[in-house]
Image (cartoon, rainbow, N blue to C red):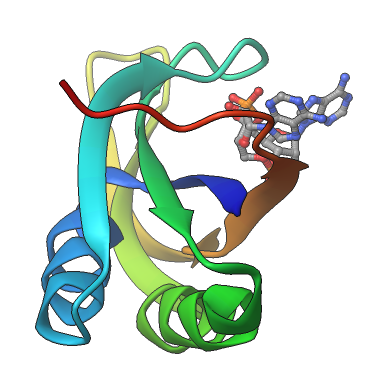
Length: 107
Ligand code: 2BA
């Protein structure tokens, strides 16, 4: 058995976890915070049989693809004026750890 720890953005977490659940995986969602950006992200815990790991990773990848989005940004001109302009940012992606499970007990 394997334990998958997948860190995804908050925006993608619902679609990743519902797609995993639809495919009969059991999922636990943890609200976590990235150490570098100190922004919220979501860590999903999935325990599954070894032969199902590739399927789970495929689902996570499909629902959390790295993509660019245009978001509004503001610049200040030191004279009390602000201008808003669009900037392109990278969002999504997943960081996945796959661990061997020594023992699994449900009481
Ligand atoms: P990613 O590498 O896609 O990582 C996204 C989030 O995944 C990280 O959030 C962190 O919560 C988790 N993560 C990634 N690698 C990990 C690992 N080896 N162990 C444990 N958790 C891990 P943040 O820490 O807020 O980082 C956000 C993004 O900032 C990273 O995106 C990366 O592009 C960049 N970054 C992170 N640390 C950096 C550093 N020391 N120098 C430069 N850029 C960094």
